[in-house]
Amino acid sequence: MATLPNPSLTLFQEQANPPDLAAHRTSPSASRRRRDVVFVVNPKGANGRTGKQWKKLLPYLRTRLADQCNVHESITSGPYHAMDITREAIREGAEAVIAVGGDGTLHEVVNGFFWEGNPVIFPEKYSENATALGLIPLGTGSDFARTFGWKNDPYEAIERIAKGNKSKLDVGEIEGPNGEKHFFINVADIHLSAKAGYFSSQYKRFGNLCYIIGALKAFNRHQNRDLKIKVNGGEWESSKQVTALCIGNAKYFGGGMKITPNADPTNGNLQVVTLKDFKWYDFILNLHNLYWGTHLSVKGVSSRSVKSIEIMEEIKKGDIYVQSDGEHWGFLPTKISILPSAIDFFC
Image 1 (cartoon, rainbow, N blue to C red):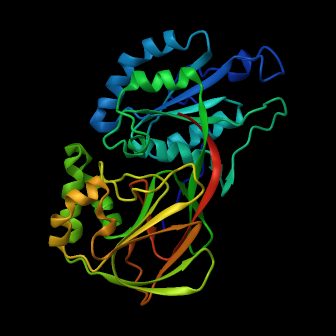
Image 2 (tube, one colour):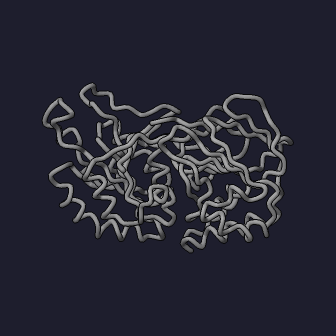
Image 3 (cartoon, helix red, strand yellow):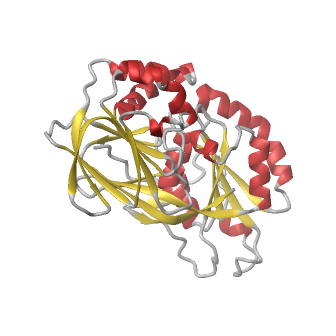
């Protein structure tokens, strides 16, 4: 099972003189103080393109938001740093944390909204609103942004932040056999697709081609497996010869594949799509359906809407991969649930 490190809680670690968020507050009333907005940037995203684009974007962003908020830039230094930055920003009362990068950066920032399975909170009483989440999509996949029909246009993203319109966003929760919890905002998946995601992460330097390479490696010696599933706390049921099981809070994964086409991150449900008894040639023959989201009528594909789902192997081997938002999480068994309206989101 994936293990997350203890947070260092070093907000703005990359800056020589860390900004003091409290210094910008002119009144104990949240409605009268200027907003503190923290931009969490993964400079290594998209093979370094994110860092280069951010340097060009930052002067425009500061100018565009100058009369609305205090802009704080925080550069991540490695895995999990975005989580630490986000937690500290919330605890210091930031009005918003904006993920700048791809789905991996967004995934870490979302997990930073939680600590030991519970939401991180700002302890002061004068904060009327919870810290909001935002996204400037500059990564390799940017699959979450596709659900909203957004392009990888940072200027459009800045306009969304400037306008300040927000919606309540659902978050998915993954729980392991020992009770440890992790969170996702896009899609969690199990078995073949999760294994493909694990391998594709090793080839990010090839851009979206990494997903094809990962799939080819995952098919090597792949075997469909019998699973046991419990939906919404009901009875255990058998699911035979499962190739992949995808649980969507949003619609896309794998660089544009519309795997859970009916998912909606604001409706309080998860869409579960199960592929059974697929061979390698079935994927090739149905690749266009998977990308267009028209695969639900294909033989061997089923779909349902759930609040929670528990998955385990019928014969325990401990080798069935689980991933969330394209990040390797661990192996079965697991329980996946929806947390409705968990985060305010700029949209």
